[in-house]
Length: 114
Image (tube, rainbow, N blue to C red; front, side, top):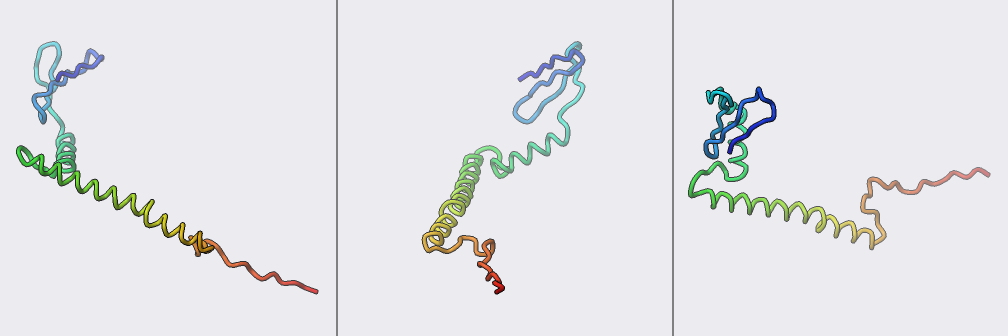
């Protein structure tokens, strides 16, 4: 893929495969730079996030592992939000109790003066 910007002074980015990009002077074809170390570091972070840093044949297995972990995380998170917590709140409301006892103070006795 070739990335050309509208600025005539900007270099042209040329992707050489998945992990290598060089920047070229659009007027004479001279290579003026490559990816920064920060870009390479962020690419490594994405690889660990998506595929546990595995390359080649093992990527399908790593993708399945990360997918299963994401599904488990989702199920636990939604279960806490909608399942367990919801049942607790509903059961307390049907019993006539406050679902948040610390937030509701008991009624105070009003002093009456004759």
